[in-house]
Image (cartoon, rainbow over all chains, first blue to last red; front, side):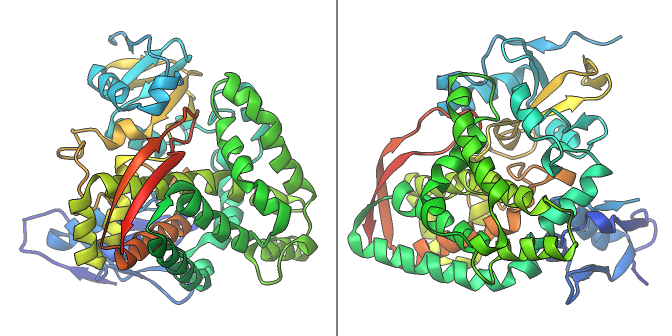
Length: 75
Length: 390
């Protein structure tokens, strides 16, 4: 797994967590944060990045926000 | 020490409130985030954050014997994913949504686009048509018939069956009483339908095949089809009617989407935010819940007012303005969380296809003669004349 970093001290590093059984592949998270996650050929969500801060954290928040079934969270 | 819960003598299901609930929503929302309505024996949730939090917390806001506003419908819905909580809900939901994922629907997407395009192209050549009968009803009925694989008399009954399935979720008023027998016809059909009644290659036929293979429990196929028809017909009809009514009232917004078809998804999200198809939905509070210092007592019935949340100025700037560039992806009209609308992918395909077809075939249009009839749960337009300019 990779980490997208921002200037140090600007933001807290947070982890994206997926509740896999709840994910129904609506795909809205991928639209919000295409660099952080994608649906594979089987419609399984792949988290390409799990730890985020800075601008990536903002996109992760947008992805969490837009999931219609609350399958994503930031911890 | 908790503050007393705000109360109001408003009747959420009074005819005038159902036809135009927005003044009531505004009054309740400005009164408090939670307002006790003794007439309906519910605690109304009125603000965006409170509604979204409740929908995301099934442990506190349970769906068991709770989503409807009369005991008879809550009894009838027992054992469905709609009326269950995790962990029981998880498996029921997976079975229901398996055929509604983007991958399952991929094949249907092109058909939906093509059908919307053909239908709207034909209406455009007529010059004037009824937005509801000729488009908002005709289109989703055809799509759901294709999806489930039925034809003939069933198709002819779907409109009244779909309306009745939503109407009976209301309180035990005359509308609910009149519709129970009709909702029963739908239930009856779903209980006796077999694979052979459904077209080869349809999703409905696939659900029965899954049952015969043992992939889903015995008897589950009929229940799944019942939920597709009960939940997916009347609401989709409402949202397509709303597309035409709102663009008719706001021609400058229609011009924007015509100029830039990439705005189609945002336009549909704004239509859904502005006028959610569902008026109110229930939850049962499992323990005392404190919201803004006021306590909803354990066991109480909560009424979620999606339209009140969607017009909350604490969440959306200038919420009473219809603006298709807003892109309100987090609107509440599909609900949210474990019970979020299972058919929202299909609904989006249909809504987007209709908007694209209108933007492709009409330069502009005017609407008049809008008729709304009071309805307990689905808020929709019954008649709307369109004067189209190709």
